[in-house]
Image 1 (cartoon, rainbow, N blue to C red):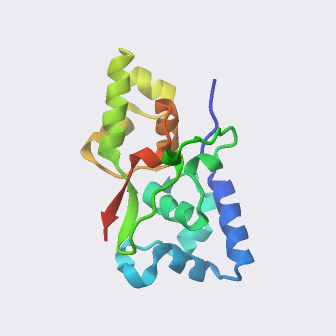
Image 2 (cartoon, helix red, strand yellow):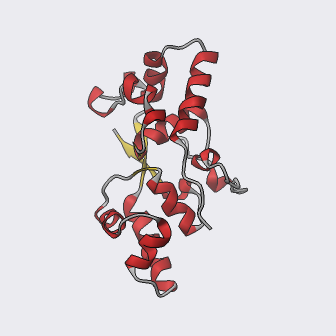
Image 3 (spheres, rainbow, N blue to C red):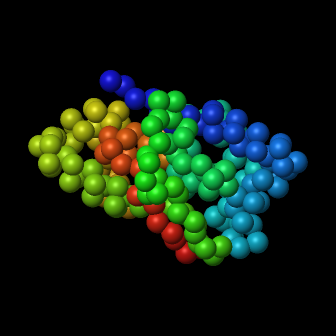
Length: 171
């Protein structure tokens, strides 16, 4: 059974609805997401990046996490066939103003490796089930960044909420 992907188009629609209901421009909404006064511009998303997220096939995961925090929504809520995790672990953690929420790629890789070994699967078999390339999965072991919708394909294959694989990082 093929599961639905995280919808960047729906994310954009909800961002736009929230922005409009609060009477904010894209720049103002983006400043709130970035907590601009607390962060260097080198790590901030631009208003054009945020306002165009719905037209993209993929988006940088850490940026999407900031958008989801601003909306107070879980990543799973943007899956058309989602079943919200009941426990508190599905909610994204609140981070301090001098921190940013990021995906912990090494932890994600560790969980992939453990389940792969438990099921006695090859990386090629895992990649086929997750619908990603082997190199994309292996690259997580180096702690690199990931993106949406790929990260949601991985956490769904693991059967765990995305929030379990996030961490607060100092700016």
